[in-house]
Image (cartoon, rainbow, N blue to C red; front, side, top):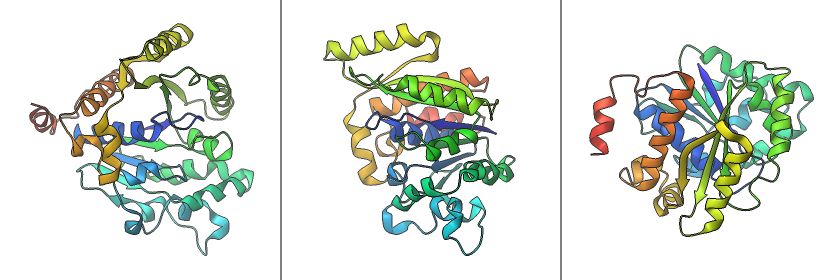
Length: 270
Protein backbone atom coordinates (compact mmCIF):
# COMPACT_ATOMS: atom_id res chain seq x y z
CA UNK A 1 0.00 0.00 0.00
CA UNK A 2 1.35 3.40 -1.04
CA UNK A 3 0.24 6.34 1.08
CA UNK A 4 0.51 9.78 -0.49
CA UNK A 5 0.22 12.91 1.64
CA UNK A 6 -0.72 15.97 -0.41
CA UNK A 7 0.87 18.85 1.46
CA UNK A 8 1.62 22.56 1.34
CA UNK A 9 1.29 24.92 4.28
CA UNK A 10 0.12 27.71 1.97
CA UNK A 11 -3.60 27.74 1.32
CA UNK A 12 -5.24 28.34 -2.04
CA UNK A 13 -2.77 26.28 -4.08
CA UNK A 14 -5.18 23.60 -5.32
CA UNK A 15 -4.10 21.09 -2.68
CA UNK A 16 -7.51 19.62 -1.92
CA UNK A 17 -8.46 19.54 -5.60
CA UNK A 18 -5.24 17.69 -6.34
CA UNK A 19 -5.88 15.14 -3.59
CA UNK A 20 -9.46 14.52 -4.74
CA UNK A 21 -8.59 14.31 -8.44
CA UNK A 22 -5.53 12.08 -8.07
CA UNK A 23 -7.45 9.69 -5.81
CA UNK A 24 -10.35 9.64 -8.27
CA UNK A 25 -8.01 9.00 -11.18
CA UNK A 26 -6.35 6.09 -9.37
CA UNK A 27 -9.76 4.56 -8.68
CA UNK A 28 -10.80 4.98 -12.32
CA UNK A 29 -7.79 2.89 -13.27
CA UNK A 30 -8.87 0.02 -11.05
CA UNK A 31 -6.72 0.74 -8.00
CA UNK A 32 -8.43 0.27 -4.64
CA UNK A 33 -8.09 3.76 -3.20
CA UNK A 34 -8.86 5.37 0.15
CA UNK A 35 -9.07 9.16 0.26
CA UNK A 36 -8.55 10.59 3.75
CA UNK A 37 -9.56 14.19 4.40
CA UNK A 38 -7.06 15.34 7.02
CA UNK A 39 -7.90 19.03 6.67
CA UNK A 40 -10.44 20.57 9.09
CA UNK A 41 -11.69 22.78 6.25
CA UNK A 42 -13.06 19.56 4.69
CA UNK A 43 -12.63 20.72 1.09
CA UNK A 44 -11.89 17.20 -0.12
CA UNK A 45 -15.03 15.96 1.59
CA UNK A 46 -17.09 18.55 -0.30
CA UNK A 47 -15.99 16.96 -3.59
CA UNK A 48 -18.08 13.91 -2.65
CA UNK A 49 -20.50 14.65 0.21
CA UNK A 50 -22.77 17.38 1.52
CA UNK A 51 -22.28 18.31 5.18
CA UNK A 52 -25.52 16.59 6.25
CA UNK A 53 -24.33 13.30 4.73
CA UNK A 54 -21.42 12.96 7.15
CA UNK A 55 -21.75 10.71 10.18
CA UNK A 56 -18.35 9.86 11.63
CA UNK A 57 -15.26 11.74 10.49
CA UNK A 58 -11.50 11.63 10.94
CA UNK A 59 -11.99 13.74 14.07
CA UNK A 60 -14.03 10.95 15.69
CA UNK A 61 -11.19 8.52 15.03
CA UNK A 62 -8.10 10.52 15.99
CA UNK A 63 -9.26 12.87 18.76
CA UNK A 64 -9.29 10.22 21.46
CA UNK A 65 -9.65 12.70 24.32
CA UNK A 66 -13.25 13.33 23.20
CA UNK A 67 -14.20 9.68 22.66
CA UNK A 68 -16.01 7.26 24.89
CA UNK A 69 -14.26 4.43 23.10
CA UNK A 70 -11.46 4.10 20.57
CA UNK A 71 -12.75 3.52 17.07
CA UNK A 72 -11.02 1.91 14.09
CA UNK A 73 -10.60 3.97 10.95
CA UNK A 74 -13.03 1.65 9.18
CA UNK A 75 -15.85 3.13 11.28
CA UNK A 76 -15.55 6.44 9.43
CA UNK A 77 -15.05 5.07 5.91
CA UNK A 78 -17.86 5.82 3.45
CA UNK A 79 -18.22 4.52 -0.07
CA UNK A 80 -18.42 7.04 -2.89
CA UNK A 81 -20.38 6.80 -6.11
CA UNK A 82 -17.15 5.72 -7.77
CA UNK A 83 -16.13 2.08 -7.81
CA UNK A 84 -12.81 1.46 -6.04
CA UNK A 85 -12.89 4.79 -4.15
CA UNK A 86 -13.68 5.16 -0.44
CA UNK A 87 -13.53 8.30 1.69
CA UNK A 88 -12.81 9.23 5.28
CA UNK A 89 -14.48 12.66 5.63
CA UNK A 90 -13.42 15.55 7.83
CA UNK A 91 -15.14 18.22 9.89
CA UNK A 92 -14.07 21.58 11.28
CA UNK A 93 -13.79 19.96 14.71
CA UNK A 94 -10.66 18.16 13.55
CA UNK A 95 -8.74 21.40 14.17
CA UNK A 96 -8.83 20.44 17.85
CA UNK A 97 -6.46 17.57 17.09
CA UNK A 98 -3.63 20.07 17.52
CA UNK A 99 -4.38 20.03 21.27
CA UNK A 100 -3.98 16.27 21.59
CA UNK A 101 -0.84 15.05 23.40
CA UNK A 102 2.35 14.69 21.35
CA UNK A 103 2.03 10.92 21.27
CA UNK A 104 -1.07 11.39 19.09
CA UNK A 105 1.10 11.96 16.02
CA UNK A 106 1.37 8.18 15.55
CA UNK A 107 -2.37 7.54 15.59
CA UNK A 108 -3.05 7.86 11.88
CA UNK A 109 -0.25 5.46 11.03
CA UNK A 110 -1.54 2.88 13.50
CA UNK A 111 -5.14 3.30 12.27
CA UNK A 112 -4.11 2.83 8.62
CA UNK A 113 -1.91 -0.21 9.23
CA UNK A 114 -4.76 -2.79 9.33
CA UNK A 115 -5.92 -1.58 5.90
CA UNK A 116 -2.68 -2.34 4.07
CA UNK A 117 -4.13 -5.41 2.37
CA UNK A 118 -7.40 -3.65 1.48
CA UNK A 119 -6.15 -0.67 -0.50
CA UNK A 120 -3.51 -0.15 -3.17
CA UNK A 121 -3.34 3.58 -2.45
CA UNK A 122 -4.22 5.95 0.36
CA UNK A 123 -4.30 9.65 -0.53
CA UNK A 124 -4.35 12.08 2.40
CA UNK A 125 -5.26 15.74 2.11
CA UNK A 126 -3.45 17.77 4.76
CA UNK A 127 -4.16 21.19 6.29
CA UNK A 128 -2.42 24.36 5.05
CA UNK A 129 -0.35 24.70 8.20
CA UNK A 130 2.69 23.30 9.95
CA UNK A 131 2.42 21.46 13.25
CA UNK A 132 1.15 18.22 14.70
CA UNK A 133 -1.86 18.11 12.38
CA UNK A 134 0.54 17.96 9.39
CA UNK A 135 3.23 15.80 10.99
CA UNK A 136 0.65 13.11 11.75
CA UNK A 137 -0.24 12.27 8.10
CA UNK A 138 3.40 12.57 7.03
CA UNK A 139 4.35 9.97 9.62
CA UNK A 140 1.68 7.71 8.13
CA UNK A 141 2.80 8.20 4.53
CA UNK A 142 5.26 6.68 2.10
CA UNK A 143 5.28 9.71 -0.22
CA UNK A 144 4.65 13.46 -0.20
CA UNK A 145 3.11 15.31 -3.15
CA UNK A 146 3.36 19.11 -3.10
CA UNK A 147 1.07 21.33 -5.21
CA UNK A 148 2.62 24.76 -5.84
CA UNK A 149 0.55 27.57 -7.36
CA UNK A 150 1.97 29.45 -10.35
CA UNK A 151 2.18 32.79 -8.54
CA UNK A 152 5.06 34.98 -7.32
CA UNK A 153 4.70 34.19 -3.60
CA UNK A 154 3.74 30.53 -3.93
CA UNK A 155 7.24 29.24 -3.26
CA UNK A 156 7.51 31.13 0.01
CA UNK A 157 7.47 28.61 2.81
CA UNK A 158 8.58 25.63 0.73
CA UNK A 159 11.86 25.56 2.65
CA UNK A 160 9.90 25.24 5.90
CA UNK A 161 7.83 22.42 4.42
CA UNK A 162 10.96 20.63 3.26
CA UNK A 163 12.48 21.04 6.73
CA UNK A 164 9.39 19.39 8.21
CA UNK A 165 9.70 16.64 5.59
CA UNK A 166 13.29 15.94 6.62
CA UNK A 167 12.40 15.98 10.32
CA UNK A 168 9.64 13.42 9.74
CA UNK A 169 12.01 11.24 7.70
CA UNK A 170 14.20 10.84 10.77
CA UNK A 171 11.28 8.97 12.35
CA UNK A 172 9.64 7.63 9.20
CA UNK A 173 12.49 6.78 6.78
CA UNK A 174 9.99 5.30 4.31
CA UNK A 175 8.74 8.80 3.46
CA UNK A 176 9.91 9.93 0.02
CA UNK A 177 9.37 13.08 -2.01
CA UNK A 178 7.02 12.06 -4.81
CA UNK A 179 7.26 15.46 -6.45
CA UNK A 180 5.92 18.97 -6.88
CA UNK A 181 3.18 19.91 -9.30
CA UNK A 182 2.56 23.42 -10.61
CA UNK A 183 -1.11 24.37 -10.21
CA UNK A 184 -3.42 27.29 -11.00
CA UNK A 185 -1.37 28.08 -14.09
CA UNK A 186 -2.71 30.91 -16.24
CA UNK A 187 -1.29 30.73 -19.75
CA UNK A 188 -2.34 34.33 -20.44
CA UNK A 189 0.21 35.74 -18.00
CA UNK A 190 3.98 35.81 -18.00
CA UNK A 191 3.87 35.54 -14.20
CA UNK A 192 2.72 31.91 -14.37
CA UNK A 193 5.42 30.99 -16.87
CA UNK A 194 8.09 32.65 -14.76
CA UNK A 195 6.81 30.92 -11.61
CA UNK A 196 7.04 27.51 -13.26
CA UNK A 197 10.51 28.27 -14.63
CA UNK A 198 11.65 29.34 -11.16
CA UNK A 199 10.21 26.19 -9.58
CA UNK A 200 12.01 23.98 -12.12
CA UNK A 201 15.29 25.81 -11.60
CA UNK A 202 15.02 25.47 -7.84
CA UNK A 203 13.82 21.88 -7.54
CA UNK A 204 14.74 20.31 -10.88
CA UNK A 205 13.55 16.72 -11.37
CA UNK A 206 11.31 16.91 -8.31
CA UNK A 207 8.89 18.99 -10.42
CA UNK A 208 6.37 17.10 -12.58
CA UNK A 209 6.18 18.01 -16.25
CA UNK A 210 2.39 18.16 -16.10
CA UNK A 211 1.09 21.64 -15.30
CA UNK A 212 -2.43 22.03 -13.90
CA UNK A 213 -3.99 25.03 -15.62
CA UNK A 214 -6.81 27.10 -14.21
CA UNK A 215 -10.06 25.54 -15.34
CA UNK A 216 -13.66 26.56 -14.70
CA UNK A 217 -14.84 22.97 -14.35
CA UNK A 218 -12.24 22.29 -11.65
CA UNK A 219 -13.58 25.25 -9.71
CA UNK A 220 -17.23 24.30 -10.21
CA UNK A 221 -17.14 20.59 -9.43
CA UNK A 222 -17.00 20.73 -5.57
CA UNK A 223 -20.29 22.66 -5.52
CA UNK A 224 -21.90 19.61 -7.14
CA UNK A 225 -20.12 17.19 -4.78
CA UNK A 226 -18.32 15.52 -7.65
CA UNK A 227 -14.67 15.33 -8.67
CA UNK A 228 -14.04 16.87 -12.06
CA UNK A 229 -13.67 13.44 -13.67
CA UNK A 230 -17.38 12.83 -13.01
CA UNK A 231 -18.63 16.40 -13.31
CA UNK A 232 -16.87 17.16 -16.59
CA UNK A 233 -14.93 14.09 -17.80
CA UNK A 234 -13.80 15.69 -21.05
CA UNK A 235 -12.65 18.96 -19.51
CA UNK A 236 -9.09 20.20 -19.56
CA UNK A 237 -8.88 19.82 -15.80
CA UNK A 238 -9.84 16.14 -15.94
CA UNK A 239 -7.36 15.44 -18.72
CA UNK A 240 -4.51 17.22 -16.95
CA UNK A 241 -5.03 15.24 -13.75
CA UNK A 242 -5.00 12.07 -15.86
CA UNK A 243 -1.60 13.15 -17.21
CA UNK A 244 -0.34 13.92 -13.71
CA UNK A 245 -1.46 10.50 -12.52
CA UNK A 246 0.44 8.91 -15.41
CA UNK A 247 3.58 10.61 -14.12
CA UNK A 248 2.87 9.64 -10.51
CA UNK A 249 2.41 5.98 -11.39
CA UNK A 250 5.58 6.02 -13.49
CA UNK A 251 7.58 7.42 -10.57
CA UNK A 252 6.11 4.74 -8.32
CA UNK A 253 6.91 1.99 -10.81
CA UNK A 254 3.23 1.07 -11.15
CA UNK A 255 1.16 0.34 -14.24
CA UNK A 256 -0.96 3.12 -15.74
CA UNK A 257 -3.98 0.89 -15.26
CA UNK A 258 -4.39 -1.93 -12.79
CA UNK A 259 -6.26 -3.80 -15.47
CA UNK A 260 -9.98 -4.22 -15.70
CA UNK A 261 -10.97 -0.54 -15.96
CA UNK A 262 -8.58 0.41 -18.76
CA UNK A 263 -11.12 0.18 -21.57
CA UNK A 264 -13.84 1.99 -19.60
CA UNK A 265 -11.50 4.85 -18.76
CA UNK A 266 -10.38 5.21 -22.36
CA UNK A 267 -13.97 5.18 -23.61
CA UNK A 268 -15.01 7.89 -21.13
CA UNK A 269 -12.36 10.18 -22.62
CA UNK A 270 -12.98 9.37 -26.26
